[in-house]
Image (tube, rainbow, N blue to C red; front, top):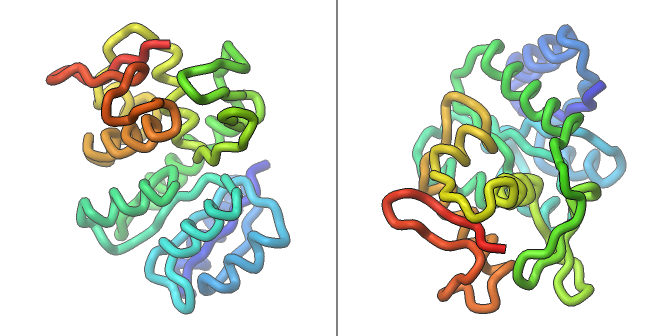
Length: 226
C-alpha cells in the first residue's frame, strides 16, 4: 500500500485529497506548511509526496530542493495554481516527477498517483547494472557512481536514462520520452526533456559540450551510444 504525504495549506483541499486517496486504499499523512513537511520527511518514510507549491513558511519548490540535496529521492507530484511553462520547468528541474495544475479533477489526480505507484512497484528493468561514459548505474537500487563516488540522480533522471538505454543506438523522440517516461496526458513541454538531457550529459559525458554518448539528432530527438 502506497504511503503518501499530502502537503497542502488549504483545509478543504487537504481534506478532499486525504479522503479521496484513502478511499482508493492509500495511506495518507498531511502537513500544512513546508516546515511541517520537512519535519515529517526527516522522520518518516513515504512512497510519494503531493506537494503544493504555494505553502507557508517554506515553499513547495524549496521543500523539493532541500530533500533532493539531502538525498531523499521520494517521488514528488507538484500541486499548484500556477500554469506557466517556466513554473513547470522549474519544478521538474528541481527533481519533481510530475506536475498538476489547479483546478484538477480527482479522477486525474488519482490517475497520476496510480501511474507513479505502478512505476514504483514494477520497475521494468532487464539489466540491473550498466556503464555509460563516466557513470556506473545500478537500476535495482537506483544509484549511480562515478569513479567510486556517489552521484545524485533523481528518480526521473534514472527513468530517462533507462529508457534511452532500452533503445540504445536508436533515435528516441522527445515526444516518445514524454509519453513513455512521464506517462500522462497533460504533458510538460519538450523543453523539459531537453533540460533533463543537459543534466544527464553533465553527469555522463567527459565534455558535456561535445557529447559522445547522448547525441542530439536534429529535428528527430536523441540517440544513446554506449
